[in-house]
Image (cartoon, rainbow over the protein chains, first blue to last red):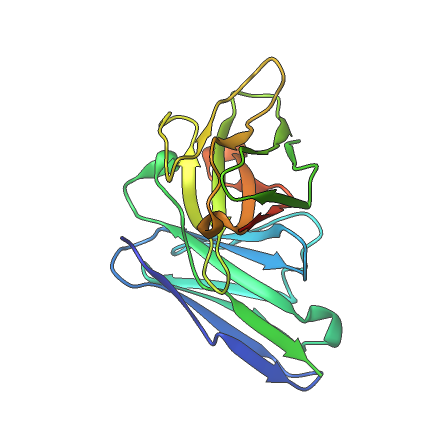
Length: 118
Length: 109
């Protein structure tokens, strides 16, 4: 099946640091990728929809200047947490749908990236 | 707005017992619903979707529009079914998935 890979799987940084998380579709192209945030023992909350070649669409309450998303190619989307603070510590998960499958295509999830801000 | 509710955070059953994980939704349009499963230390993966009307690993789920529910059922639970289960609804523009809070299923030997 299709594989989505995230890197790094875990990052620890000091407050004020900017951290970039990558989401790659390894064996398929994805025009749309999604970024979620998951707090401990809570569900996934959609942060933004990443569209290849255009600006990301952010959900209400998500600061676009705080969480920069770049979808520069059909296999890579990046989420940059700028000037991270302890409250940004969370589990960030991406998902992707193979290009050409439209809205009925299956979503494939990455393994998630844990961000710990000290 | 769309919303997915899973009323039980934890469901514990014995091996061989029937299991039902509840999911209720609210959505103004025609919904498309899914169940995702996350086994320990693994990524989230699709279990089944209502449009397929299939049984995966012995699990089934029927969309009940009258009760706005999409409960996940299995007649005989197995220990390997222990995992987190998330109900999800596809929302506006056909792209966004809204997840329920998740239910942790524990199947005891």
